[in-house]
Image (cartoon, rainbow, N blue to C red):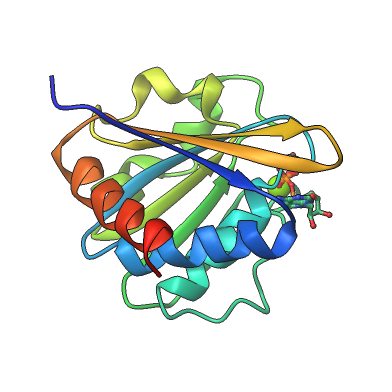
Length: 161
Ligand SMILES: Nc1ncnc2c1ncn2[C@@H]1O[C@H](COP(=O)(O)OP(=O)(O)OP(=O)(O)O)[C@@H](O)[C@H]1O
Ligand SMILES: [Mg+2]
């Protein structure tokens, strides 16, 4: 199976934003991104960077904890979903998520654990971990051809901006 991984250290919030920007710049085609990590890990911060890297406006990227779906206009449409408050996967699909997943968009999903088994197999799975002295570590795994292409571009930008 096609699979690729990436690992990077994020010393502060600016580095999380920058890593997100590089990921957004690497997205040349629709992509599904799963964003895991404990409360306050930096998932929404990374999302702000991704939207900016896609050429969208970052001012309005708030945490979608209260509104479940945020949409941004960028080089590709971006949907930012948060399932934190959902109790069942059925609630997720009642929101019309199937349509979003089939649209030509970048779909970012915070707290994907509840629904991940129902999502397409080709996706970029990101996890952010707290590290000592208020730093973070990010791991990413691409699980299909689209995600692998994006991950390779992302890796190049992280290595050689
Ligand atoms: N690499 C980093 N090092 C230190 N702090 C960071 C880093 N990245 C982000 N932060 C900070 O962590 C805090 C939480 O970030 P953020 O809201 O993005 O997390 P989250 O994972 O979306 O949280 P939630 O689970 O509540 O949605 C923010 O104050 C942000 O500035
Ligand atoms: Mg968040």
